[in-house]
View: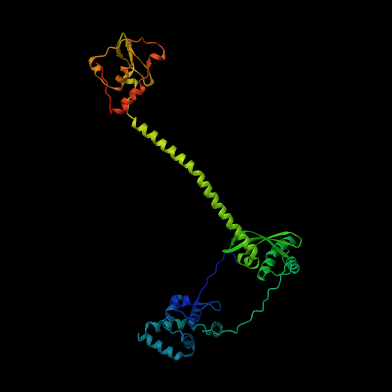
Length: 364
């Protein structure tokens, strides 16, 4: 059956539980609402039928329907009492349904009741699925359907292979060579299998796994074993690749930590003034004069030491890394244009800036 089509399955246990209908009431329900054998009573629907059947016992419901026609006196008396409101609502409902049902002179149909209730003798199965005959099949489809012989043979192959498996490997002119892979067809586990015919031609079909494993146990076991080994191999490959990637992951993690340290150092240096703003000075005749600087000047711009250093009294008592460095210098030595007379103060000043939260330099 095509997967586009569906069918509904009903069981008596569910019907009795949910609808309260046994076999007898179910037959009566079909007579009132319609079934494959009739259209039912015109104007009587599902709800009213269920309400009425709920007032009648399972064993007497069929006889009650027959009495509508066979015992008119009883219902005529009820009709008279109906006018004076001397009967129950259930009796009123039954009278209304009976009136509509008797518009059909054949109600209730005895043949339909007999078809549903009377059990037929069990018929022994006479069908015997013999080996499909390729020659007869080709003649039939050529005459009635006009099929090409190659196309018809392709349609015949799955028929003969299925018969072969169902009949425990009976001779059919085909030999199963290998199981190619697993498939699921309409929710059924199948194998894609390869056959060879007497002309050594390959034929591919899909067969249920339980049939293949029953007839060809060795091929089935080999296929399962190969599949399990492949899974183990894949697990080992994943483990090896994971172990190889650990150093790389550590390296990447280390690089990320280094990046964080760089970002943190940048944040700590935010707000600090450039070195040349405070320390680039021109020397004229032994006097130190501050000059304007630009943002383009490097923090490593050298400061030339004068031939004779004149420090004020307050500067003599200033202790700093800068002063410490000056103690070891010969201030009376002449200044040359070479790099020997140039002192790079960037490292010294950076250490001062880091140790002090703020440096305020003033000049008189």
